[in-house]
Amino acid sequence: GSARTNACGSACGSAPACVQTMGLDGRCCCGYFVDGLESVACARCSRRQHGRCVGVHSSDAFFSEHTCPVCRCSTVDPFLVPHDGDDGACFAVGLTSRAVTRTHDPEISLQWFLSAEQHRLLLCASSHTSSSPPPLVLRAASLLCPPKGKKRQQRWPNATQLFLNRAPLPIVHYDPVWDGISYKDRHLDEPVELPMHLLRVGQNELKVVFSDAAPHAVAVQMMRRRTVDDIRRQVVGEGTLSYDEALRRVLQVAGSSDDDDLVASAKVLSLMCPLTRMRISTPIRSSRCSHLECFDLDAFLQCQSAARIAKWACPICAADALPEQLRRCSWTARVLEDGAFR
Image 1 (cartoon, helix red, strand yellow):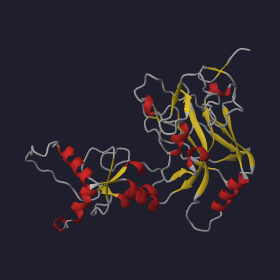
Image 2: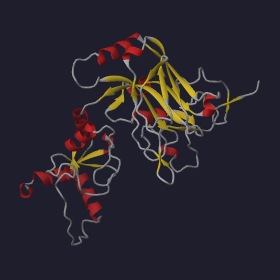
Image 3: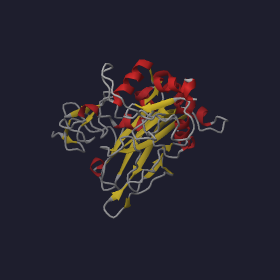
Image 4: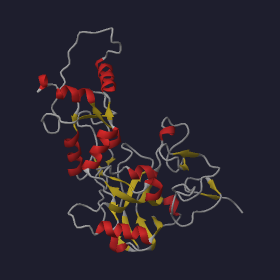
């Protein structure tokens, strides 16, 4: 028989198992297998996707830095990380596109099997007695595919409606607004935590109804919640620059790459946190920052925790400042400990 074609127009050997299902068994997020097709590998998990489905081509400068939809959805909220690794955490992933559905109704269906043990873990987490959010959740997130601007920005398709096992789910979604030139996203959309009373042991279905021609990747993942203390321990334990590394960076930023060629100059380095206007306790910068000034780790994490939509950006230069990008500066820490600067 004739070969089928997927949503991006590539020839495929077999159709997806359902409208949209797991993309972890050799299938692209569109539901078709990627064997023999032009594909791109994720720089983080090596999972392959159709280049045209995710908007990446071999001629693109960032081809080797491509991150797949599953990994991108995993980083929407740094306080939530995949439970038991990316592969074990992702239950279903799909691509919203009018071409993908092949019907007049713009909708996709994500289906997955929830084991009795997984249901028990989620139920125990949701019934904890403390006032804090549950430590383990099943979450649905959506991102524009290919990304525009910030790669991890949560965004639901326009006019989205969600149905979990046929029951409607409320979502936080804001349509783009017209600024006189073009429509601009307000970046206020939020992922949805799937309620336990609608989940069941066995087969589950999340139906996404939308009215948006732009494709979006939607993923259902089991996520573990991290606290401020968890991230603080990670940054201090894994992101601390040694004194020699920090000193080399200071000399590099100051413009002196050779210790024998000293240039008489002066630079005022503030020891006040730009967030609290108080003396810094734990000095950090992002690995993306090009300045010497630091900000306080505890103040930064508290701001991200309190914000409804955390930006995770440097308060000085607005560079990305995700937990894995934060670096504790040992040189600045030694300056702070010096009695002459108290």
